[in-house]
Length: 161
Image 1 (cartoon, rainbow, N blue to C red):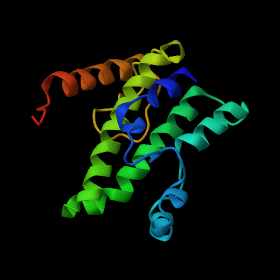
Image 2 (tube, helix red, strand yellow):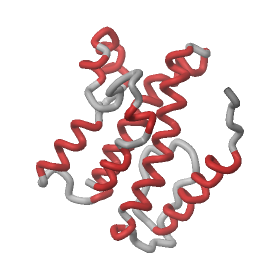
Image 3 (cartoon, rainbow, N blue to C red):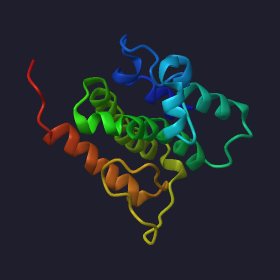
Image 4 (cartoon, rainbow, N blue to C red):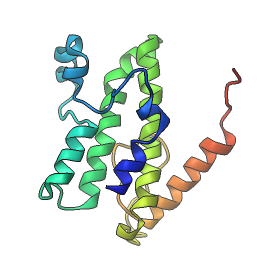
């Protein structure tokens, strides 16, 4: 629950516009894209659904299953907005970029906040930085996520307003 609470405090999730973009199912938030969304996305997920499953108690057998549902929220948004992003459609570009950032942030946050659930698994593949849709809860992935977040915070160009 701590991981989810911290994630939902991220400014891009709590922003006034667009309000609750990741909190409710897409078909309720944007009924006009319901059909095209369901054609592209096999397993829809949102923060409210993931939290409900978590609070039910029996829905997730492992921490990794919960984290994978959280990552699914952002990978679905990335997948759905990929085509629009590639052609430069402004709304798709914005959702794509925000979702990519939140996926990386949720990976880092999950591996930090849930570190009591991490295993040391040198033989398990390490998720390379970027938009990996899921990751193992390993010490090795935590180290990679830390480096990725350091790069984002310290090395990426920030637009001046």
